[in-house]
Image (cartoon, rainbow, N blue to C red; front, side, top):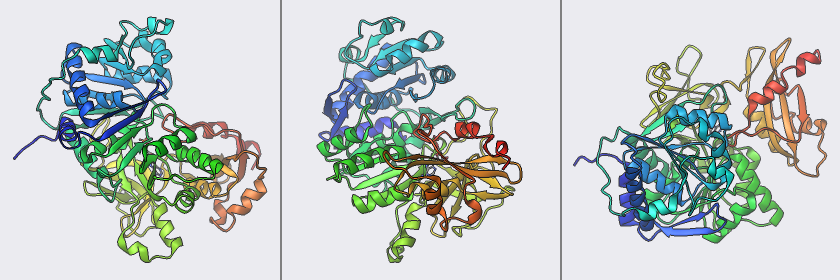
Length: 539
Ligand code: AMP
C-alpha cells in the first residue's frame, strides 16, 4: 500500500489513537492552558479553514513568532497539513534580521504572540510580502503598537468562526512542510526547507529508544524553542507516540521550569546547556532534586563535564548528549550507551557519555581531512564532520547559487573524531578552532574543564592573533556569584588536565559572556573584542 508521508498523518494518528492524552501550555497570558490531542486536532482543522479563508495559496509560507505553546502547535499542524509551509522565525534575532528573513521567505502571513507586539510594530511597514498579521490572543489590544500593524486581527475569533470540518489534502510527500533559517552568525541567515517526508522520517528517528526514547508513558517538556529547528522535532515525535506534551511558554527561568516539571510530572526534558545551567542553579538553591524527571537531553552546544556529573550524580538523571544542526533537521546523534559500555570503569564510561553520541538509522557521518580523505574511527583522529541522510538538506532555500554538498555529503562545519562504536565527539566548530603553531587546540575541551571548577559559571575559549604562534587560546570566564577565584586558581585547575601548550595565554574574568539567539555563546564578538590582546601586550 502506498501512502505519502505527510505531517497531517501525525495529527490523524494522535487524534484517533491518543485522543485523551493531554497537552499543557504555560501561556503568555500568565495562566496554564490544558486540552487534549483530540481538542488540538479540532482546532487545527478550524485553523486550516481559516488559512483557506485568508486566501493563502498552496505552498504559501506562514510565519510564526511564538513561544512553545498550544497555538503554535496548531500552526505546526494546520500550516503544513494544509499544504502550506510553516516558517518559524527566531524572535531573538535582531529586528532587521527578522524583517530580512520574513522578506526572503516571502511569507504571506505572520502569526505572532503578544510579547512580540512591539517587535512587529517596529518592522511591519518594512515587510513587503505579509498580507495578514494575526495576533495569537483573544482580542487585539487598544494600543499604539497594535494600531501600527496594518489590518491586525486576533487569532481566537478567527478560529472560533471557522468550521471544524476539513479534509487534510493528499499530496506528494516531497513537498515542503517547514522552513527554518540558520542563525546567521556570519552574514545573512540561510533557509533550510524540510519536506513532509523528511519531517516524518526525522520524527520517527527522534522517538527511537537510542535517540530521545519517547513513548505514550512519557511526559515530554521541550524547552528547546519551537522557533529553533522545530524544537528538535519533539512536537511531532510526541504526537506519533502519544506522549503528554508540556509546553513552557515564555518563561525559561530555573524556577518556572522546575515548578512546571513538578506540577505536570515531567519525565523528559531537552535543552541547551545554558538553560540547564539555570535549572541546576535553582535546584542548588532549593537543595532539592526533580521528583519525576528521569531523562535530560543536553544539546545544541557541548555538555560541560560538570553539568553531566551534577545532572547524573546529584539528581539521578539519565543524561543524553545530543548533536544536530539546522541543516540536519536537526537531529544527528545521541549519546545513548551500548551494552558493552556497562563493563567500562566509571571514568571511561563518562568519557563516552561526554562524546556527542552516535547516529540512528537514517543518517550517516564521516570525518575527512583537508583533502577530503576519510579518516579512521579511532576516537582520536579528528577531521571535518560530514553528514548525509533522509533529513539532511540538499540545498539552501532560494539559493541555487550555493552548492552545499561535497560528493553527496553535507560539510557540517564541525571538527570531530569518531570512535570504533560510532560515537562522535565535536572538538570544535571549524571557525572556532584555535590554530597555534599549525596545531589545533580544542576550545570545547578547555571550556568544559574550566566549567568543571565550581566557581566558574560560563567559559568561552577563543583563538586570539599572536605574533609568533598565529593564534593562542584566551579563556574568557564568568564567576559564580559571591566567589573570588582568581587567574592563578583557575590555572592550577587546568594544569595536568590539558597538554601544557594548550594552556590559555590569558584568562579574562568578565561580568557577562554574550549569548546569541539560539542560546549559544557568540564567539565572533569575543574574538573582535580581544583581537588585539596578545599583539598589544607584545606577547
Ligand atoms: P544550529 O544550526 O544553530 O542548531 O547550530 C548547529 C551547530 O551547533 C553545530 O554545527 C555544532 O557546531 C553546534 N552543536 C550542536 N550540538 C552540539 C553539541 N552537543 N556539542 C557541541 N556543539 C554542538
